[in-house]
Amino acid sequence: MEQKEYYCIGEVSSICNISIRTLRYYDEIELIVPEIRKEDSKYRYYSKEQMVTIIIVRKLRLMGFGLKEIKQIVTHNEVDMLKECIEERLCKINQEIEELHARAEEGEDFLRRLNSGREVLNLYDEDEAFEDKPIDQIKIEEIPEISIYYDRRIMNSYRNEEVSLERWVGINEEVSKLGLKAIGPIIVTFHTGLLDQFMSKDCDIEFGIQVAASDSSKVRSFGNFKAVTIYHVGPYKDIIKTYIKAIQWINEHGYAVSGPVSEEFIISPVDVTNESEHVTKVLFPIS
Image 1 (cartoon, rainbow, N blue to C red):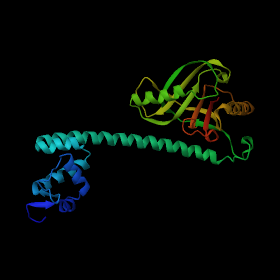
Image 2: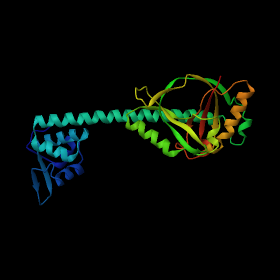
Image 3: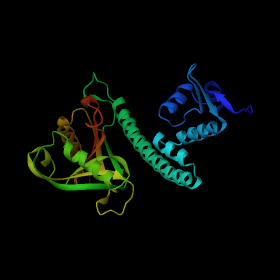
Image 4: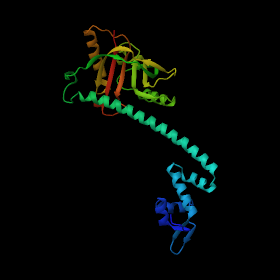
């Protein structure tokens, strides 16, 4: 830096790597007012001390400080105050980093579900009937054990034609409020008679969502059983047809449904509005 007492706004802009427009704005809000101003030419001149202040302001802006905070800091110009402000800001930055990590993980989980659903959709051609697909639609699987946050209650005169948006949204909000980490899809389990959920009966229904392991009383184990599985692709109101197809297969192959049926929403009605792209995996525990 050339050793002189004052620098014009263009020189300050170049040396401090800050735009002239920003410097003029700082002048307007009286954050950094040029020490010399020539009214006839409207030229602004900054002292060496003000150049140092501009560099400090730029550094604080890069850390995310607001202009009101910065004005207070540079006005007092004390090490202890600056130290305290930096410590507080770093705490906020670290918290923001944690929140961004959580959002990224949530987005990655969502993307995994969409990719999984897309793989299922790719097996189907829109011009062919579901029953005619040359793929193995029904499988026997070992369902791995996972942890789920759950909400189980009786729903009166229930008909399994529409997704209960109230309970769907509610369980996601509860997981968020408790600080639990959701890592999988919504799983709805029907603790009721087989197909009762389609017959306007009072049904004991559990909404669950896969979470990271927790000692919460509202988190339980799910899985660790053998099940017949089948994917339902398309409008949820038609899912009874998929149930009947799976139950017929179970009976024909000498198995019996041995526990409550669950539905795992891979691509759900609250993910995309196009019903033809909804993918639900139905799990029938068997013995």
